Length: 452
Image 1 (cartoon, rainbow, N blue to C red):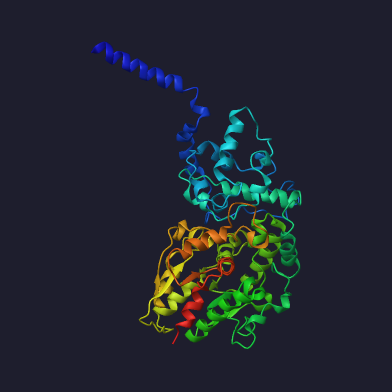
Image 2: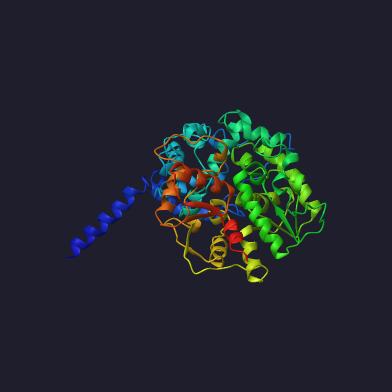
């Protein structure tokens, strides 16, 4: 008996000792690096906040990541913190629709490169293909779900910065959006003078007409360039006017926030737009800013502080709930069951942690909300983020928007409710493609329809 105990003890010790040389080369190294990753990871306002680059600094010679040495130290450490659980791959909309992108493979390739004696001089495109880089929707699902705090999305966006800024190597379809943002201050072809055309005949005051508004409505580019998105703006204007809100819009002084430019790597375009917008917003001095676009919300709230712009920014569904709660708008709720499923925009639910406001607004309008399997902060992307809105989707087994619409359709809802102009376009296109009777509407449209 004693001899057996001694034998088992020595065998276990021997197994541990034999494992030690393998430990630094295995995924088990995460036991050491994961706590460091959490302890030292830079604080961010949201998972989507990107690092500030001062383009006025003439000493900067490299934009983005051409080689691994161009990444931050925390991004290199991610490779050793990786647990190889593949959770990020499982939630990636690109991977789930047959694209070549795998966030997990990127982190694993980084570590394998080091384990095989490689250095940080390795080109990033040796670790991930260019096609995979441009398939990312910047939805943030990979960052949100990682149990050890890894951020593969950030690596991809840094690679885009290098490709776009240093090599002018980006999908050609993005040229129209880039030129539009540079010349017309929006990703489309509409001239800046036409930015308020959507409000013709409406009582929508500009800051010139109402210089001290309590609410500054950042309308966004979509209503200025897209007829479908204009219906959301019209509905929200109806709500604000009915509630007697003291608000104003920037009108012709409003420009694109630069979200798509930044996520496509064109930091120069984003820098110019952000600098200009912050200057105008600071001059106006609005107490609160409301926007119907989560991408505008995210950029103004989380990325403009680096440019000297610190504002209280809310989503339009949050303001709608305030107005309903204060009794400033009355909604006619009928006994019929209006079955709605809400598609959470990635930049609202995941990047900015707002999932209740849209549902509360729908509930106030008498809608019966039926949840999709993937909802809230774990929602599945519509496929338009990360500048995908302005380019063709990479080849795969399915389209991201169609995959999401199929999930919405499976709930049996009559309407897919959204809270983002990108989502509105993508879900509408998917519904048209299937000739589906299911309607796609912004929450503001549904609330406006139920107003007494």
